[in-house]
Image (tube, rainbow, N blue to C red):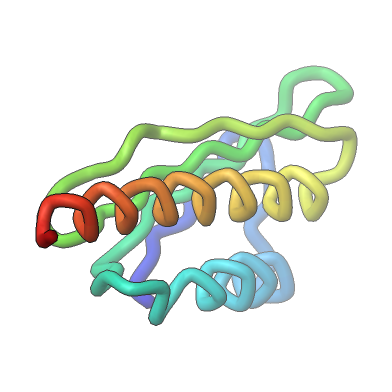
Amino acid sequence: MLYTLNGDNVEITDALRDFVGERLGALDGRGTETASARVSLKTNGAERIASGTLRVDGQDLTTITATASDVHTAVDKLVDKLFAQLRRHTQRLDGRRL
């Protein structure tokens, strides 16, 4: 999956980039062709905020935000929410095809 990752007051290390890529890779092959994702990581005091948008079949799904005390936990929560959004999108498409 193609993705862009940027950070606001968060250092984007190679390990963090690999972690995000690995987690987003789990979204591939879920019934639609996931073209790309945009992920933004921010720090707000003690909170770590991860927000992301999937571009699926030529359209952007809703931007999702997740917060946690650790950046890895925030990314995990974000990917779980993106997966749920992708599942709902796929179910809507399947309903139209019937």
